[in-house]
Image (cartoon, rainbow, N blue to C red):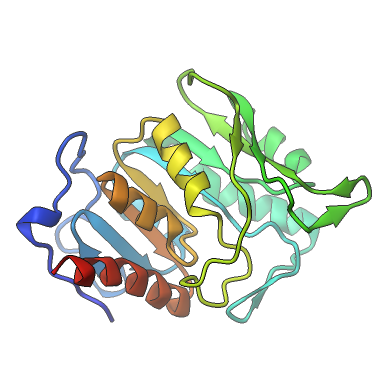
Length: 237
């Protein structure tokens, strides 16, 4: 288990919202896997950890899309009705505590997400040159759903997909540029990512000085994320 010690110079300054902490007395599985400089990782199922967390400004989620990918031994292939119930279950447990919410539903899953709760708007992640394809051609875009106050600027975010050398064998990490632009666009002052994966959301939040929590069920991915975050700390020493 990781436990990094925050230094005075690591702490976020402007815009920090000190609400991302578990209540006193909560321990066991709720003990942080990693914690430093306003960035925290919890190892576990987000549905079990949500109840111990207080409100945040932004919930940013990139859940498994039920595409039959292998996530550290978990094969993402639930029956479609069961997957829909799972999406509604985890979403309902925390979404009301976030001022703003961004979710990547995955192409082909809008019919699942729109009935759960109609979003305030739907944005587009434009990813030119993406090699994945469908019956209509190469999938060079992907929707992101948004709930919250009106945002300015374009609804299209352009970020290419490329191999990231520090994300281990995670099958589909989002580009750092994409997550960074979303954090800026939503003017996030704090963020929770309930499906942390290899840690890109926390890495982007750290660089922007935004306090953040990530929750991840795979200890292997927790380790990858902690390594990414701690490597930057070591570079500053």
